[in-house]
Length: 232
Image 1 (cartoon, one colour):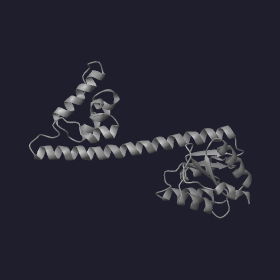
Image 2 (cartoon, rainbow, N blue to C red):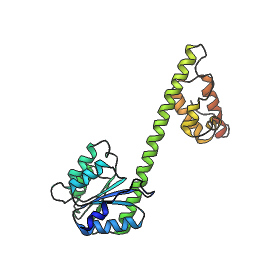
Image 3 (cartoon, rainbow, N blue to C red):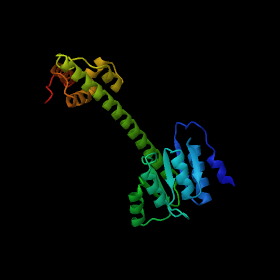
Image 4 (cartoon, helix red, strand yellow):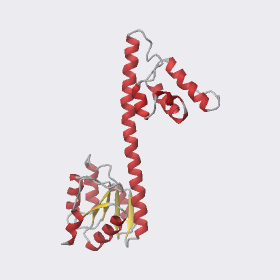
């Protein structure tokens, strides 16, 4: 059966991303597989809800295109199950269905969908929505990674401040910890100028550093804003 050719997998994902299609209509699977593959996406196509759910849980894709009306397990149930699993909770789901009533769309969004496309499929519309939600998903992932780095650095700075105070040094002594530079991906000196200084000052203020450290960063912000003092 030709559907099995969609399920061949390789170890590495292409730059464009990996997409799972779950639909019980072979024609829809073939159409979506063809247009997505032509755009450089890796595609896995599954002919029913249970197989689609198992495939996503075993190896989460970057995005899911999900039909609603399927035998056994419909799209709503698949989406709810995916959102209950930690490994698939953040994967964006775009529903693709011939059902066009408002209540159908509302139910899809409540089940965890991020978008809804009505059949018959308009190729450019589908591609635009896919690209948009993949972009949003990647930005969210980058933000999460940045937040983790910030948290790691904040702990480092807090520990450094406690160590300095316990030794009578009055906090960090005005030094910019190495973790701060690693957090922002810049040398310590670069954290005193431009947009980085504002973000750095915000994080520093929350971790109770020494007055000298805050003074250095505030000075950098004042230079950025042409000498206008930064409100405290």
